[in-house]
Image (cartoon, rainbow, N blue to C red; front, side, top):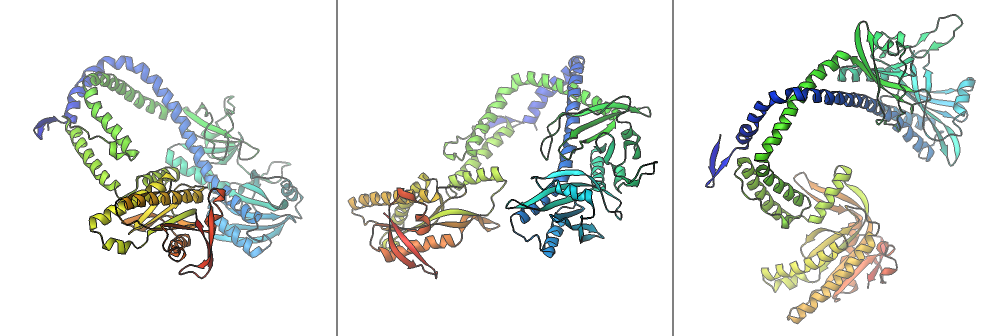
Length: 618
């Protein structure tokens, strides 16, 4: 448990070392700093509680925003389908299917409909466990007609005022509205409605999760969502002279005396800054305390002005005793933490350098590895701390293994894929505009028959080094080596608008390197090599292709096949040339005046029926 010998050296456990050096000092010093720590801990705790309260309301606000986001997304989707002419909005059957699908994609939405510019209304709502469609008209309802026409000259998406549901539903709805235009012509108004009872069910769930009562007020006097309203609320107004229905309960109409007392004793709503955007989270939290039935309660809330003309107050309340218990726990933790901090500083005088030195070394080495510069990573020296010694040996073994692994996986490709993973969360297969290049040594089989294995390997290594240098100089990706052939591409993993020009410059550089290498071979009495190159641009599928145990980041598709066939066409065009490169018309169209190409005619590539014109890159 204490000391032991490893490779002839005595090492010590970091656990025992730290326990003896720091644990004893902590035990001795706690009593002396307790009085001083109490005052500081109280200030820190109250600041922490304030931040925690703000975070609690921010979390509640974010969750409400998430609950209301799907209706927004569905309305935008419906708008785009209609506005861009994807669907004939006068086709009632197809429009019904579209609205039903949108309803299925957003369980928060009770119903969705389209008010045509002639005031006809196509509705799809949830009834009896499934969507029910109906066609109606607003012509006999002047107020509804006027409300719909108000959006004829507007753009964007709007949260409307509360509306009552049809009598058979006995419910109140919040609603989302978005005018639809096609080529400047107003087609109608999309409307999606969310039941207030649905919001109350959501608030009830949040309240159970957080152990506090959550609420949403519609203005300061009416309750929009509350755990007691999960079955909805709408009642007839029976007071003299009043007509219609009451869409929302007042503060005193819900069975919650604590919420009813929120603005009592002369306290009014704290009008904090309106929250921007569909997911507002960065505004000050309002709050105050009230005494209800002899118990003190804390109310925390924020005002939201982006969900209609009437502000919402989204918040929660909980007994002040909850804070008192939390304060006591945090005070205790703060006192202990302060003592540990002071004594840790004292202990760092004795142990800091000895422990920090190897940790800094491994951190620096790890940063170098993260950049995939394995060739300059130094081995970690041994340590007399057992765990650090084990760590150094394991790290050094890992570096040796990674250096072998790097011989088989291109470092630049790995870095690009890591960057792509940081940006998108993973490597996914996508269709991308790329340029692919195939190279092949002419008569390599015959050439290799006259050489031993060592010379064949040396020849290929020289050739592949020249090809790889040209590809990497233009920021391309080597896909694979296939015998004496090379497949490379541009335009992925990172998008490259000039992928065709990059590929063409790389091909020119390959030709120059091959000719220079042949001069060297001729001076040594060796036979020169001849190389065919095919280049094609187009769309291809790019991503991880393979089995669960082995994948390859590669490209597939007809673009790849055409590039390979162009390389094979070189046999017919110029079988005896030292270097010949053929590009397709698709590539030529993107090259510009930087390159000179000559047409070699229209040809039918092997395995394809459509003819293609090929050009020689001079």
